[in-house]
Image 1 (cartoon, rainbow, N blue to C red):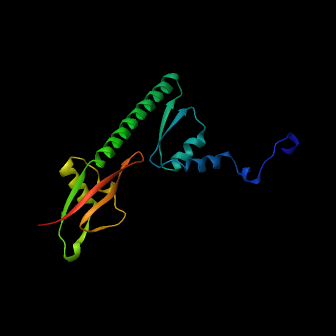
Image 2 (image 1 turned 135 degrees about the vertical axis):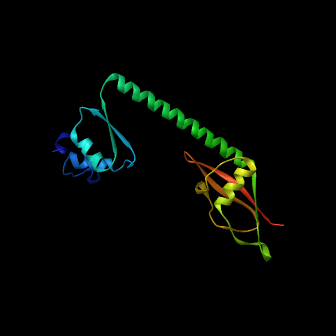
Image 3 (image 1 turned 90 degrees about the vertical axis):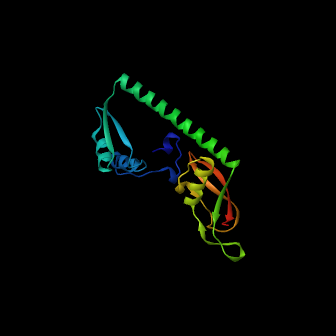
Length: 173
């Protein structure tokens, strides 16, 4: 049929489906469970049903010009907030480049530590020494720090911004 109309299709471009309703359900699987779904009123019922079955919160809103404008303003405010948070993360990453966090630990012969320096210890030292609060879960060590010396660890600051924390592990006197 398509070839008769000058259209060429590759087999990888063909999608066989059992109907739009199930396809919509599969498409909605791409969204997070904690999303709030805003549906216009009136709405095609399958949009609501698929989201209710997925456990998402549904918010009904009459499709008026005022509501559409309000949604646009809220989206604009959200983007501005995200831009400010990303700028703050980038500023924190720049600060981290300029400082060293000192962690004091007990060790034995040969410069080896008793145990390892944890991400919590690094986060606590960063807060105490430089006033920068980064949750321990955001500090990523490629390998455990088990010896005295200077190390670089990554800090996930959000919005795909990663900072480098310079850690100096010193022997307890």
